[in-house]
Image 1: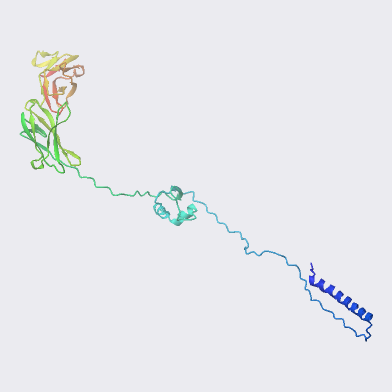
Image 2: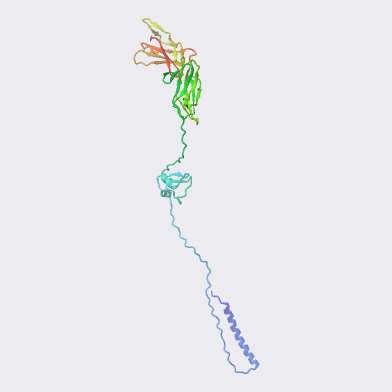
Length: 357
């Protein structure tokens, strides 16, 4: 579209005015009577400026936005054939790779990790095998060394066997040997078959082997005696136990064995004949014993004693009833009884040879 400049309109109207002005002046001269030779007035044509009409520019906006190019996409698929490990506190991808037998690059690929430096506790990661769990070790305080003790001795006493000592009523000195790391030694006594341990003395002087004085007043003593070494931190060590007994009170005793019914054999008065059926076996006494066992022994060589029964309640007498029928075919043998105390010591008594018929 062409646009006309306002200056073009201006000069077009001005040219008309000039022509009219010239005609007016000529008419005025005629009216005034001026007689002069007409001098031609040149017509001055004023050339209007050249107006260059251009096309109206189209208004637009410049932009620096580059052309959009579709990115090349790459897809990562986790390695689902691997096991899942959950990240623990202190884990890094490098330590997990080392402990699971792989590399950091393989873990990144298998788990499609965007940043291998960022893993969080509880995050599940695919690994070829479960990482070896390394438990941090902390310095443990050394275990205190406890006390130790060897054995104890009784003076005066008479040794009657391994770990068995006979004492007389009176004052007995107890000493401990092989004691270390202890500040005191306490001696204990426990009656065989009854009662709880009782402290009978405490030694605090290592210079005299932690000695204590023990007054024996029981005329029928059967007991175990031992010592406990105690350290300053109350750790303890115990000595072996000794069996201590007085002159009248240690080994069990047993009385006479009686078989009822039993008859002397007519041809051999030393042989007792037992009937087939029930027979009563009794002993007259058993002291310092906790039970009495009754046996039958076939006199033929190579036959072991056969236990017939036992009695542990002596309030109604000591004895058992046994049936001789199983032994009817035995030509001859012995019946005997054994009294045993709680320490395993025993005393026995036997009958004359017997025959069952």
